[in-house]
Length: 446
Image (cartoon, rainbow, N blue to C red):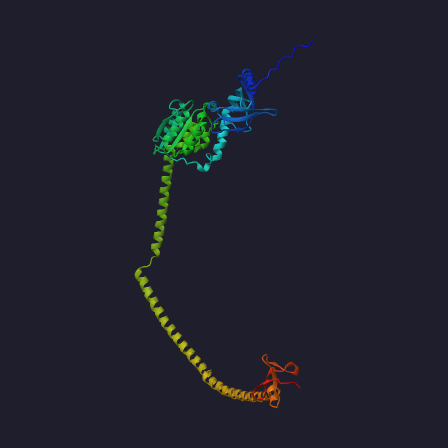
């Protein structure tokens, strides 16, 4: 006998999805995972949504805003990360995903990755440009120290400042240089500089330490506060090999806090010695200039002529010029008179009166010839005109009519009749004679 068929178990979609959800979430409560971020997006809610993938598979990932406070870097497409999270099933869509509680860049520390990302972004904005850095004054009257009030750093800087220029005024702005609240205190102290109008330069300093210890100086808030400060800031953070974001933004970077104090003020004794050297050089230069001026004055006094003699010489020269001017004027008048007489003589020879008389004679001759020619032309034209009139008269129809002929026209059209058949009996005819015209009626034809 055949065994009885096992009854089928039919699940609804929601029931099956719930069982899968329970199975996955109980099997994988928390798992470590690594992969490459793609399709990263951050909507208005502030949550991170992206896909983790490798060369064979991918899984949707979520990191809610509440878990992001511990992140030291900014997720982006193409970044490989290692994360800790729990598997969850989103029942409305029937898809599984991983909800991350923690993640860090794979192969590089989170702090170092955050440092590189912030450095690249601020550099692109121009916060590191040398053209935007403020000049540090050569001899500041008042210096602000932004550092921890305890420890060797502040003592070393004060000692260097007092040793180099003992009457420089020092203002200490105490802040935490690491740990919670350090960023806010540093930003607040930099903001206080704008209210201290007599501060010429500030030194932002702390001793050496690990990347975590120096992390307050890699904060974007601190970087933007340093950039916005109206007072020039010298950064002296950590050891010579340590670099922070604040170092790149600061107007001047010193390798150590003590070196920052040395860069801030010159050595007073060296300035005093230099002042004495310059004073001596200026005094010697003044003596040399006075000696040169005295020698030039003596030479000029030797060449100086008494004013009376210069006046007498000028009077003699004036008399000589007056005499020469008189002779020159007479010579000019004489030459001008001779030139005028010569030109009058030439003008008399070339007088226009004789030319006018000659032109009058020629004009009378031309008039006579012109009248004679005109009369001849008129007589010739009269004869030709008479001949033309005679010829025209001979050819005129009227001349023919004088010999007894007439011109018959059929009325009312006034067409000339050349054929008797063209004038029917009873039609009216106009007969033009040598003198006058006759109106006739056709009575018959021949």
